[in-house]
Amino acid sequence: MAAKPRPGSPRLTDAARPATFEVEAHNERGEMVPTAIAGEHPLTLYLDKRELVTLMTLGHAPEALAIGYLRNQRLADSIEDIVAVQVDWETDAVAVTTRKAGKNIAKKIGKRTVTSGCGQGTMFGDLMEEIDDVKLRNDLTLGDAELFVLIEKVRKHETIYKQAGAVHGCALATRQGEILMFVEDVGRHNAVDAIAGFMWLDAIDGSDKVFYTTGRLTSEMVIKCAQMRIPFLVSRSGLTKMGHQIAERVGLTMIGRASGRHYLAFTGKHRLKHTAPQPTALA
Image (cartoon, rainbow, N blue to C red; front, side, top):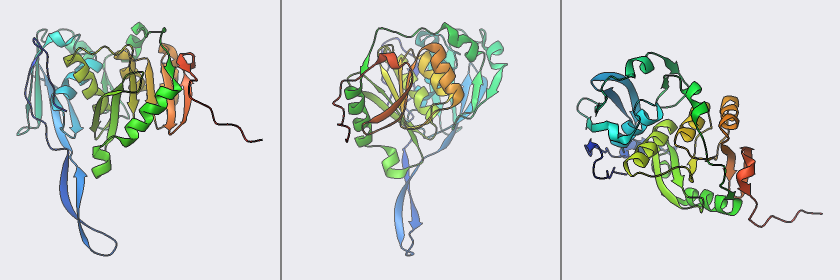
């Protein structure tokens, strides 16, 4: 998915790399089988010439990934603060230039938290403390019939995972089950950051949206969803204790083990409405 910036948005390169590559593999019968594998590239992020982090990524949407990373790490306050995002695969680097070079950056990057996030593994600043400032809309509902529509659409979506495996996927959707964007990367946090970047570039409001991820619901995933002001977080996987605690703290509706017509609502169940026909219980 290539970034399509609005007028006045940052100057961007268009440096997407192929998502898959073909290699030779041999099956159990000794036969050579051309096989697609996922790409994986190091991408070192520089903010106003200051090295921040090296991300392992498919490289499919590197500009949006860089922007979303800065957004979710609270290292940029708005898309208007970013002047340019320049990706150079010869040096495996992305250089971001801002209008507030160095302002409050040193303090934030001085505190690093090593995390379990695949593809990343670092959070900057006091994100846990700042989460109390997040306000999610409480006047919205999500019908389980629409949730089942979204789950089915994601299942049928043509994905890199179906071709090559080894990736996580994230989707931004409406409450009616329409997928607005779908991004995959080697790490689930890269995928959510890329969506956050696209949302900034396209001025998409997350306050009435649903976020779907194939990955587990950890504290980092909950924090990032809340920072995008998205009230609904859905996963086919499970969750962690801290993820559950933070979801309760910010009032987020967190749904796990979502597959077919089944799900478990762990927090924020007041936003869910039972609208789909329920199977008749056996006597």
